[in-house]
Image (cartoon, rainbow, N blue to C red; front, top):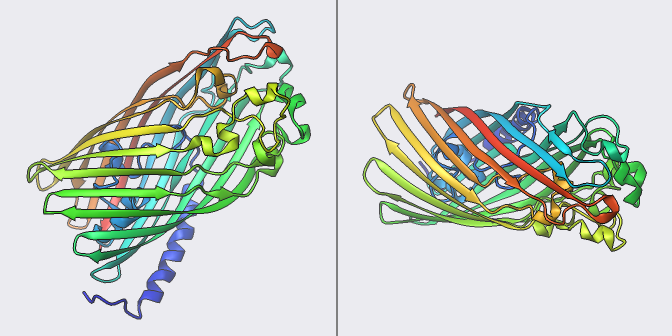
Length: 428
């Protein structure tokens, strides 16, 4: 293969543009979920089967969503997959003097189908391009019995946040075994909330607070990555994801800080992998997510008691802390036709005990993820991959969580998750 980009590059980039549009359309039916806070615990069936590890352990085209530099070590291929996601979310309110006490299930909507798509193509020996389109994260709750009914709320309560990530990618091997990658990161978001009418009295724009239907926002940022091979068996990777600056949710300008702002937080991380034997590869990732850098996510409810209303520049949010995430995974080549995987991931809990009231709507509190997976080489050019994930139930018991003006007491929230997924990989 030539080391220089040929005149066919323009046609290849045009094809990528078409794939981008098709991939975005494919992923839009998917709804939202929570794993590492409200981000995915991994992208692609192979990574998910290995605990989400991918920063320095690329296995398919989806790896560019974790580290864009991975494109230089991925052959020309297309991967298409989906996940069946089943969250178990709910809450309990105790000791409230305004009549909110009870146990509430947020599971009226289940399960969810989450599609994803990725493509990588080498342009030369040192330059590769690609694109990854996937559900980036989010949250869904649906309470048929409204936890806030005693406050005067009507109908069911819940939120539906969807985030679609579109990341065209270019990567360059600038020295032997050393690569850098860049992905402009485009995002499409939708949001809807219903059933929280009583809190609108604390908003600077109560007409745009709840039950306003689905609203859309669009944004852009960037992701950069590094992947290095040291010897034949050891790899190191790192990435930085900027904040994704988005347009406002105008229909919810009275709910979210900064008149409907809901940027996607910045994150960064690093990983290593090693071929422990000719058949066994071990990997580990670390990631840090800066939830506190987005006011509508990180601001505490305490600002409301200081006279700052919902929707203001420094208005109340969900009070989420930044989190650290650790992942480990193993990939074993059992035979020429079969590869098996297993992994584990653990993250901090982003929701403090003092912030559980609003997080009845967004209980993104699971911490542990256990995964297994396998790939079958169906033909010379087609792979079939499956995986399963279980995140055991995690509960956060409130402490000083319901302010006295709302009757005091505590809101306790919980979340567990089960998922199975499949993908088909096509080599060219």
